[in-house]
Image (cartoon, rainbow, N blue to C red; front, side):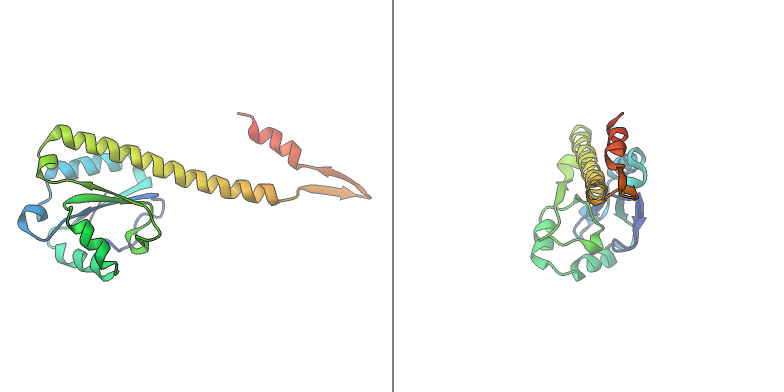
Length: 177
């Protein structure tokens, strides 16, 4: 987990899911509840480097808000801002995020959630489940890339007009578990 002065910096290169704590700029929302930080840290420990979560470093609220707004998409950020505080979950770093192209999830963490342990536990169970889904989706797409490359490759050795096709042999070993 990153307690950060920037949300557009370079996150962990192994991360497949990115979670950002969003808020509005008034006292009630700027003071992040300690139990939310604890839950984010717990989430980070369970996923390791595959999930990067970001919360603002004290005193960096204005800079982070300015960074987010500087990316454009004003109407999108305005709609998100109406539902803060909350956690924004995406599968690309925030600097690469485009609301027209990338999927996202937003989990509202108002006082009725943040101050109720049962509600908070339920939301973090959902976030945990969604992280698993996104990680699996990313792993699957990487696997599909290698499968496509494998399917398009020809593995034949020929000598004096006779040849051996290695692909069926390799396929037998690939499918065994």
